[in-house]
Length: 197
Image (cartoon, rainbow, N blue to C red; front, side, top):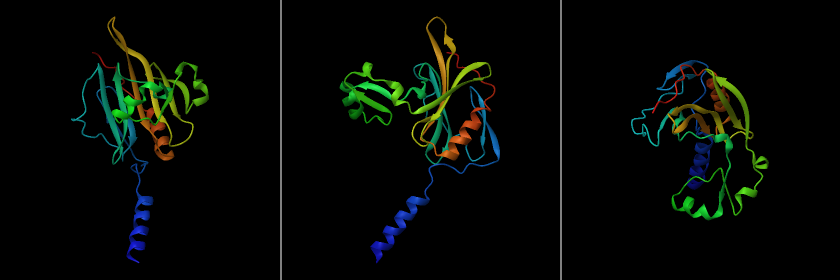
């Protein structure tokens, strides 16, 4: 009887646990070094003192949208276009991923990566727009909960005569309510100023 009770209680706890904060209809504006964004007031600016401020000419930051769930931004050389996933990686590199315990959620290992037709593996919808005069690619998963939601701006600034710097704002595996709120929030970005290294 006791085993049955604890078993049922554990299943109930799993069902009621939510990854994301509830999406509020009341908005708040969060101000970062490179932009400001209006989001549901249940989302917040976490204490990012432990994050690397600048590595490989890239600045990172985040918006907290759940107990351990975040929207990330990267501004600089390391900012990537997450709509390009899944990545096709040579099978020989698989051991590196396993050895370093790297995430392979959106990685396909193949002996001949150049022969793979990536158009058949597409997991994101993309569309073009602008944020404060910068051409912007917006994206979200084709299937809710599997893929990235966010935006990517290519060549928003540069290290003079060395490299172009990019900007990305993205989150992974969002539920439908959080995904919709994030898409709405992206349209509110203001005061965008690219990193200057």
